[in-house]
Length: 393
Image (tube, rainbow, N blue to C red):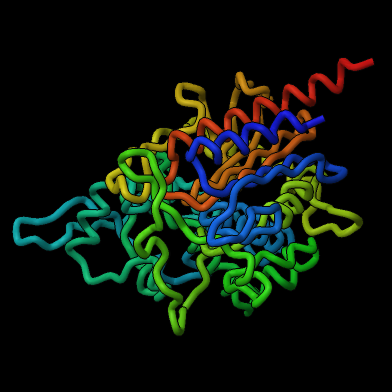
């Protein structure tokens, strides 16, 4: 039924738009279709090929945090600094003084877990925020990729709860999970979330089996061809001080589909419950009030193009995925959840139609137009197949 997706992937590879890509469509009952095309370094792309999924990690970290909210170990609206003391000390950056020193002031309200999960905390990423990029250039704070805890101790760029801007908030959520659980984030996932869900190819560090199925990173050139990326991901840190809850996971389409199906099944999968149905419903609702998601304007074109999904349509944020506030031409319903990873990895979860999908590749920069075009085509084809199945006698 979903074989209309297969030629889309083949054509993308044959035309040179991508070297390797996989797509998977599922519903609450199981996998409906997988499609893969191309490969890298002699390895064919498959639904169990291992990819760096970057910010698709965030939804997993959010689910882990909400387990702890259910247990009363974390609270959405209490000061997050009660768990991670730096968050009680954090300041808002207001530019530089005449002597070149940063001007910092206390925030108007404490940062909360809800702010961190909705990207309304004031933490940002330098690739989409010129002021923060300038701050980092004039500071001695290590980059996030160093995996030093000092990399997280950066200022806010606005008062919590006053606007949406994408950033490292969920890396701090990972720190909160570690603080109250006494486990590393990876150990917490394996014990309480990815392990129970059977996501055995999802981890911060690859097993030997995963290593054999990992795909290399590519970079889109000015002439639209693809070349090996030059150190897009730093070499493994010998002694990392934390695991990136905001973007550190490796995974596969097969594994990530198990997470998507858990959301479609209101917190359970194949008899194993990891979240209550009420918690999932809360995660899937707008948690940012009247604020709305905007365009991420790039200040680092090597890492990201300008990024906005469904420009012009209102979008809010749950805990922690983007929510389309209206139905879209591809077929997705209002209330559909989605997000993405830096290497042009994408997913969506349509609870109204009981349909979800994931597309994985390993290409920079993010929001690559050719990748987004393929994603839109895959999604449209999936809904066309779904609608056709409902009308076939």
